[in-house]
Image (cartoon, rainbow, N blue to C red):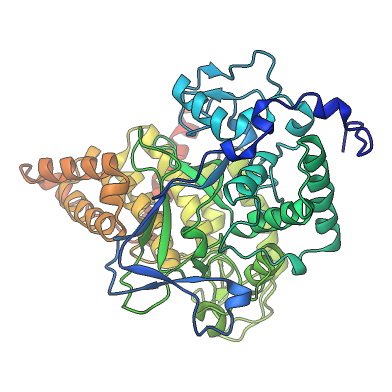
Length: 527
């Protein structure tokens, strides 16, 4: 603690207790219907691992890909500290121009409207507004998101809406937390209990368990930036129904937030990412997937953060050549995929010269930093497998450069290569693939490469529908529909139609040759 605090001297705190602290029965009750279920139910019977995993969610009948399984508003939530100046602390929307009704509030909260300020005040803030000591424990930061436990507002909201007890139905695994973590939970619980004059016999133990529950069941609320295509962390929350979903490294469902700009950013939708048969468990990823992370690394992370040993099918199957880790290509046969440090290629059994690969990779990274993307790509072509994400990222960067110069044909060739790497890694029907398809469709459309644009737009629409993105990202889906409608009435130009997009290898050769020729011409002019 970075302020002087004594459990023996409570008068300085108790004299600041207001009417709101006299009778906690005025704490508003939880909403009657916070969640809506579709063709799914909770299941906690006949399971030997129920203690370790908690309750689960099972499909009651077949759920088609893209369909919503659970739609839910958070029971308790907390905005990221990085967003408190420009996001509403109640609903997480932008344009937060209103402040707390107390002029000297130490929490520096902002709201999008007086209505949201009133809702936040009545639900949690009036209990905390007078206590700057507790604001020092408003530790909702990106670094603490997954490893830290209870922000004070979340902990108290959980305590009171749960009728001064633990959060119902959610596991805490408190016995598995480290001794140091449990000491931190107890210190914070004692401090909060004294400041707010919580005198119940078991209050410290209950606040400790709530902090452990928050750690094991928190879901990060994210928003996709339409301009940049990145997921921004807004805050975190407890969703009582969605928290019952178990983890899989190869999940069959995906979490989405909000719907389109203007909708509630905290509204959670769990959608099936592929067809789910009846009586099958519905699972999401807790941030670690077989496509992105090596088995040992993801199992260790899940054990340290969530205190369970992952036994999903992806972990049981072995996952020998993980697309995320096996990013290099064999120098000898050019077909084998290698993870860093493997001595021999599994395809040709020849020894790998990692010193040479390391030098080439370092030089390529330096060229990227200097903005010499084509030169870097020539080196990366020597070491990265053409289905590896690193190769796809390199091609994507080069494609951005061509697009900025208005060369949509070259840009589309690069993104085609990037799409192949993304599709090979995450699958043809995935969120990552949908983003690349939209990008490629836009480039082809703007470049008037009609036949390829028609084919790519149609595939993008298929993937969007399969994932439910036609509803979730309605503005993007409408853009695809408008392109498709326009392309129906456009005849391909003979010259453009002949410029069919090449494969990854030929696209790279074409780009390199084009840039080399341009560079040679510039040198001759200088002479």
